Image 1 (tube, rainbow, N blue to C red):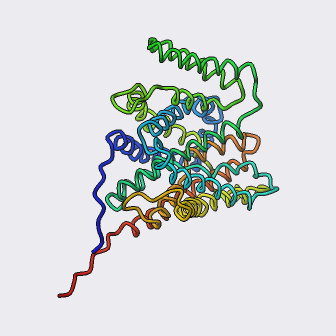
Image 2 (cartoon, rainbow, N blue to C red; image 1 turned 180 degrees about the horizontal axis):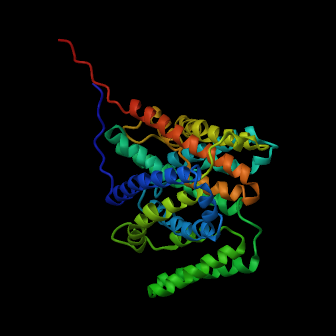
Image 3 (cartoon, rainbow, N blue to C red; image 1 turned 60 degrees about the vertical axis):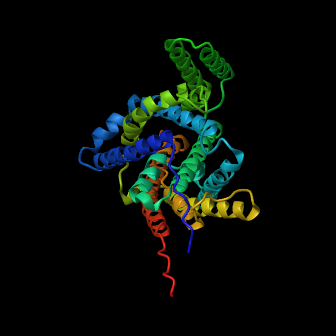
Length: 388
C-alpha cells in the first residue's frame, strides 16, 4: 500500500501571509472587474479622464512603492526563516522560477522579434501571488502544504526576477548624483536601524530614498524593495520586518493593489484594439508566454533539476502537481500590468491596450488550467484492497 507522507503544518507567519493574499485576491478580482466594466460602459470617458491624470502616476509610482516594500519584507523573511534560507531547499524553486521566467520571455520574443512590441518581453515573466494563492486556496486539501510552500517560494523568486527586470531593463537613464543620494539614504536607513532611532527619522530617510530613486531614473518602486530588504529580521521572535509586514500587508492587499488594478485594468475590449501594427502579436505573445510558457518552463526546469540532482521534490509533491503550479503561476495580473505600463508608455497606447488584453485573457485561462491540473493531480488514489 502507498505510504502517505506525514501532514505538514505551515508556520503561522506563512499561514497569515497566504490567508491575506487569498482574501486580497478576491478584492483584486472585484477591482479588476469594476475597471473593465467602467472602461467599457457609456461612462468610459470618465474613466479615461480620471486615470489619465497625475492620479494614476501617484498610484503606480507612489503607492506601489509600498506594495513593493511589502514584497521586499517577504523576500527578507524567506531569506532568513523561509524556504530560501537554505541553498539546498531553495535550489528547486529557484530553478523552477528561472525556467518559468525564461520560457515565457522566449515565446514572446519568438512572436514579436523585430516588431514594434518587442520591448514587452518582460510582461509574461511575472506571477501574481494574490491570484495564484487564491486559486490554491479554493482547491483546499487537494493542494498539500509542501506544494503551497513550493508555490510561495517560486513566486517570491519570480518577484525578485521582476524587480531585477524593472531596475535593469525598464528604468530610464541613470542620473549619477541622484543615484548617489539614494545610496547614501540607504546607508542612513541601515545606520538608523542599528541605532534604534525613532520611527520618524526612518520614515524621513525612506522618503529621501524614494525621491532620490525616482530622480535617478531607476523606477521609484525599487526603493520600496530596498527598504524591505534593509529592515532587520531574525530567525526567532517578533522582528521589525515581521511586525511591519503584519501591519502593512493588509494595506497593500486590500487597498493599494486593488486601487492599482482599478487604475490600470480598464481597457476597452474591442477587435479594433488588435488592428494596430504589432498589437495582435503583442497580445498573442503575452498569452502564449503566460498560458504555455509558464507551466512548460516551471515543469521543464524542475524535471531538469531532478534529473541532474540539483534539487529534489518536497515530500508528497509530484511532477504533475508542479505542472499545475506552473499553470497557476501563469496568472501574471498585477506585476504583468505594471511592467506593461513601463514597456509601453503613453505614446504607445495601442500596444499597451493589446498587452493588457493578453494579460487579462491569459490570467483567466491560466487560472482555469491550473485549477484543473491541481484538482485532478491532487485526488488521492484509493488503495486497492488486498485479496485474501
